[in-house]
Image (cartoon, rainbow, N blue to C red; front, side, top):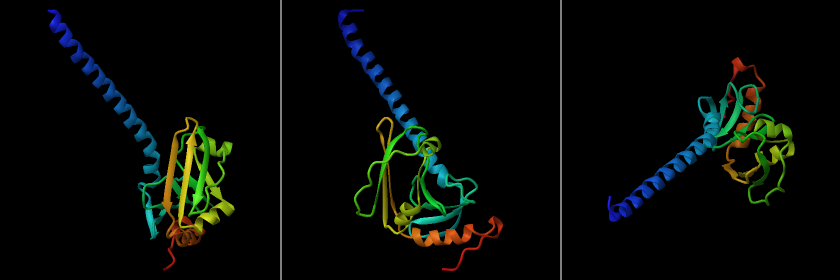
Length: 186
């Protein structure tokens, strides 16, 4: 092979090698994105919708992170958020890898960064109950920003329209036996 042919061959091999690395990197990124999105889709797929109000659906679920008696509220848009009778839960987070989180309701200032409890870490969730849940139910918009231990941000921003009214229906429906579910007329 002449010196000219060798010089021309090197860029071709280098280009092919670089493209192979790019394809491998793209495949890795897609695999990571699929793993992050899967819990979100699973939390909302396949559950029977009992009622809808605003941006929210009341669903009967056989298994949810809220561990209620089969009743859960989920946004109509893709989200990690689920609401039960007693709490709001951000689901599908990396277990034992949450660094901290902040949330904001409406146009109020963001909360102070908080470190999740060990129980939340073990379950891969962030949960709000009591006064925090009441404040969320009375709001119009809920935003949460979660940092994992690698300082990658996971964010969720949901419209709360219809949540409070539908939550009242959830409380009524979930207090009944699972096989005797009746939605009160609106």
